[in-house]
Image 1 (cartoon, rainbow, N blue to C red):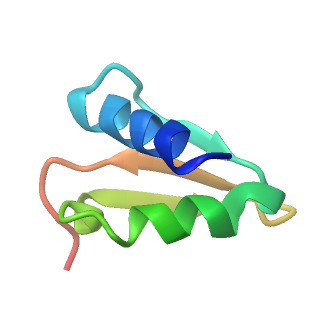
Image 2 (image 1 turned 90 degrees about the vertical axis):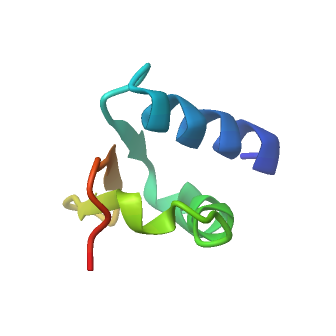
Length: 64
């Protein structure tokens, strides 16, 4: 996964074009590395799945 591709996914989650995005375990660290650099980082919720995969959703209110 490239940083450009990940930012595109995150932007689509933010705008509501995507309601959720499933990240495979092997891509998690690359995805997270890009995610934590964003100013709106706290608006994203990652829900752990069996096997280490994560389902990401965008929240209107930032998590604490």
